[in-house]
Image (cartoon, rainbow, N blue to C red; front, side, top):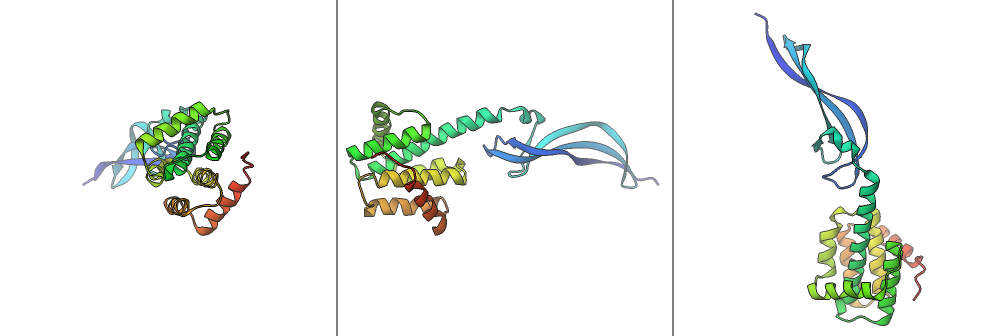
Length: 210
C-alpha cells in the first residue's frame, strides 16, 4: 500500500524591518511562503498549487499581507512622534496642575517645554487651552501616563519623565506631592534607579529659559 497525503511547507524568503500595524512601531519581520506538497510515505514529493506569501512580525507574531511592506514608514513615524510630543506636554501640564494652581514660572516653563518638544513656538493661548482641558477632566498624572505610555518606547518614556521633572521643579525644589508623582512615574515606566537618575540629569541640560 502506498501512503499518499499532503502537507503545507513554509519557508522564509526574506527578512528586514517594517512598520507593524499591531505593535505600532518598527519591528523585524520575515517574509514567508507557504505551499502545499503531495507526500509519498510522508515525504514531500510534488508541489501542489501556488505559493501563499505573508509577512510575520518577529515581535508579536501577527501575520500580514505582503502589501504591509509598502506602508509609509517615514510618515507614520512623524505622526507617532507628534502624538507623543502632545501627550508628553499634557503629562507635564497635569503634573503642574496636581496642586490645583499654576504660577507664572510654571506657565513659562510649560511654554518652553512645549516649544522644544514640538519644534515650533507654542503661544500662551494654545497652552491655556491645554491647561483648561486638563483641569476640566481632572485626570491624575499617573493615570494619564499609564494610559498613553503603552505605545511609548524607552527613549520616549525618558523624555516624558524629563519634561515632567522640569515642570515639577519650575517653582523651585520638589515638594512632597511632586516627589510622589515622579516616584510613581519611575514605577510605571519600569526604570531602575540608575535609569531614573540618568534621565533627571539629562533634563537639567535642557537649558530651559526661566
